[in-house]
Image (cartoon, rainbow, N blue to C red; front, side, top):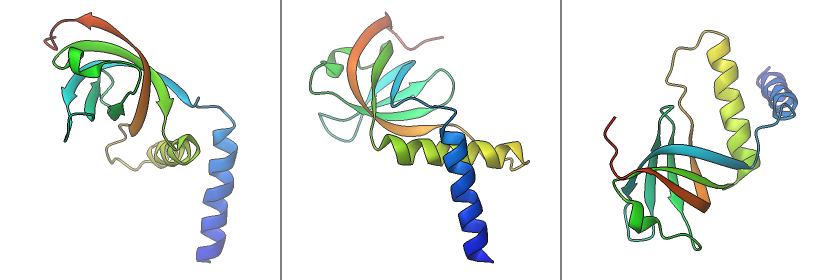
Length: 118
């Protein structure tokens, strides 16, 4: 029975991934310093949270700013399956927090505001 349920969830996740969450995301929110000099956290306007890094963009210059960051989701297939499963659970009445969380390798950043105030 467990195998059947697991297989069903996997098949549903495969089907829903065809709807197409992209490997690339553009996220607007507030940037803060992470656990070390190369890690940053982006709290998006939609409630999602992202651990962000970049080897091409100076994120440190934007700490405390509201930014729009574009980048590639790390482990995109697994990330998208996790998010699709959370969406399916939410659709069936599970009322747990459904905010997205992930890791993003930023390739472009634009400052929206020099502060995170709303």
